[in-house]
Image 1 (cartoon, rainbow, N blue to C red):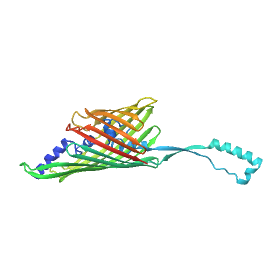
Image 2: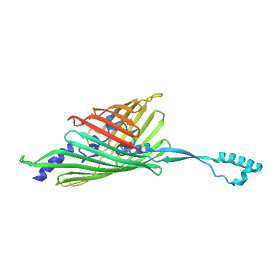
Image 3: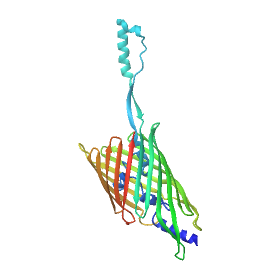
Length: 343
């Protein structure tokens, strides 16, 4: 009897796309006020720690090279500088050194801490936190994701109340990105575990991403979620087994307004689920970001006919963002808050 109740609950959760059946559910209830506030359309210019979730190539935005000039040391001793002949030789040597001096590009160390909180409808809360920092010639990032659902009532087949059930999803994502010329490349590994009473779902995938600025004012991006990925479901009769996670392809571009202001960005992206069995496998995202001042911006977007809007504030090394969007289940609005601290 209990298995029957759990089976019905599994179908209930799957129909709401709460992570287990496909990564598409993970996308619907996703982190980042900046990203969600602009309609999930910022694939081409998403940056820093939150990019681990959307496009790992965005980690490379933290790379800030420093230019240093290297000149070979002088071979002359201090006593040789006082003769005319030595002075002439020193002058010639200095001239030669200028010719062979070279500019060396070194990566400046940067680190970012970030956290995101989402208050979803139907008693759902989501926490996302992470850290990223420059390492060698790239950027390494690690993030964690926690989703909880409260207020799930359990009933047996006779309609008798059996108590509250605990639902929770926890995940971890780690990735690395680097820059080569005008392109940024990145990859990440993700792992998730979902539990509902005796039901357990766990799995993970490999993700890859790319960003590029081919011409001024234009950024393009591409990523593949679950290039390779699988999950295993246990605890329910006749459902156990390993299954493939859906592979999702995302592509988009960001077009900025020309100088002198360059204060407006138009964001467009597309998502395609290669393994979806229904007709809702391809959809577009549209967003708009307006920098009112250097430290304040507003954003709006639409995703699957779902509107969103928000704003962001930057104060020195602290960035705060807040967004509101309509729940994809059309059960109300949900709020997102995000904070980033850069060093």
